[in-house]
Amino acid sequence: MEAGLFDMAVGGISLTESRQQKFLVSSPIMLDGKAILANKKHYNKIKTIAEVDVPEMTVIVNRGGTNELFVKENISAAKVITTDDTMSIFNRLALGEADVSLPTD
Image (cartoon, rainbow, N blue to C red; front, side, top):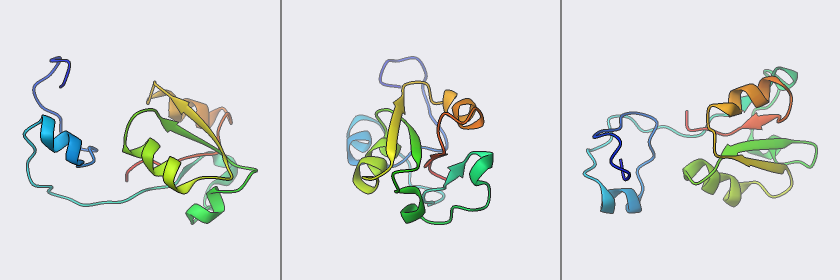
């Protein structure tokens, strides 16, 4: 929106003070939290952030958003990979290049 490429954005957008200052923002219709998106090696095994934040884990996160901020504030032991291509996260998880991502659910 800031680049003028579109007029509206809907869904999966975290409400932040800086975004409220730049754009007209409606009241949230749903409040959610973080999800642990894991590759098949870890399917149904990881339940907590503490289980993610270990040296054996690699976390992949999209650069520049609230997901990256969450990782910076909550992940210190795991390896972190940042990417500018949010859609590549799913492929990189499937290929085993990363163990988990922590998107907004």
